[in-house]
Amino acid sequence: MKNLLVTGGAGFVGVNFVRYVVANQPGVHVTVLDKLTYAGNRINLAGLPADRVKLVVGDIADPVVVNRLVAETDAVINYAAESHNDRSLRNPAPFMQTNIGGTYTLLEACRKFDVRYHQISTDEVYGDLPISSAQQPEEKFTTQSRYQPSSPYSATKASADLLVGAWVRSFGVRATISNCSNNYGPYQYSEKFIPRQITNILSGRRPKLYGAGANIRDWIHVDDHSRAVWEILTRGKIGETYLIGANGEHSNREVLALILKLMGQPADAFDFVKDRPGHDARYAIDASKLQQTLGWQPQVTDFEAGLERTIRWYQDHEVWWRDSKATVEAGYRENGQ
Ligand code: NAD
Ligand code: DAU
Image 1: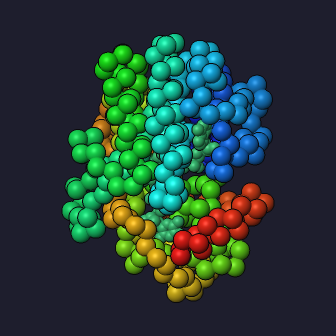
Image 2: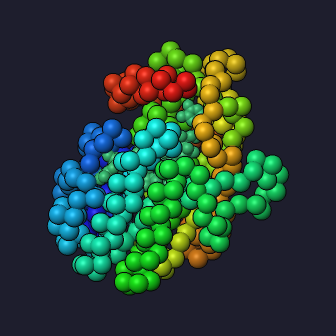
């Protein structure tokens, strides 16, 4: 695979994958197809060699641009999505259009040109686990778990996964799916939990915790996600689904306490705010299939050290987040959050 089409490659998880490929896979050329929504930024690709990475600004739901690009690629890795649960509660329409319509358009192009396809999905397709289940470490999502998404965002991601499965079975499209847990690291837009709290502190605002802060997320460093996707893309079995996670379960309150400590703030320097409607309680990934069949293991196993590096990145890249910060916070204020 020498020519990859990475959709959504100017957003958080996508750009980290593009950077991983450039750094670790010599001879591979990446074309990024990105609509540059509020979450995509061409600056994220700055500094990458022009002979290795090309940006095409366009929509994955547009068959003209998609067919042109898919015709000349060896594999498509679909990171492009509307990705934020809170936004999907305010306006589900773009989620339907991009996450379902866009996936359909990409699958049809891969069918037409017989191109390998990988769908970047989320653990949220499985709904949630009760918080009390955290006492039983074996109670985690597996590839056998039932699809029961809670939000418009996760429902559109679940729908897209079902399309991929059908295109494999009915049309023989050479596709795989990966469902990953919550990512953290550089380039994450400041509306998401970890960058929001870090940039709140850096801009003199107080961090905001939804509800009682008891909800649990299973954190993985974005670099470990990128390595897993590469393994699945190059060595995964067609038609299979792989779960990606790094045993990184923490309650939101624990994560915020760590951020406050690492940033030298008092432990009570935050506000409890209105909870998210339908808020998923706990996510937890059993990644044993990926570990046993492809030998992947997470490398960033010290969450505190990973978080410290992430905080430093936001401290060093204030120009990157400062301009959009006020807009993000105005949206949350309107929402009572
Ligand atoms: P993001 O919102 O930061 O980035 C999404 C990118 O997709 C942006 O660059 C945006 O401009 C682009 N995009 C949106 N609509 C598009 C369209 N119609 N055509 C082309 N480009 C479009 O999202 P993210 O957090 O980087 O997530 C990327 C993917 O990873 C998503 O599919 C998401 O479901 C999945 N995922 C994310 C996480 C996480 O913790 N962030 C975890 C598991 C899975
Ligand atoms: O599990 C994978 C998913 O993780 C991805 O599919 C999504 O694209 C990604 O956005 C993420 O979804 P979450 O809803 O878990 O992420 P978010 O960063 O929005 O919130 C994480 C947790 O923190 C969640 O329980 C809500 C809470 N939260 C969030 C914000 C923004 C707060 O307590 N305060 C906040 O200010």
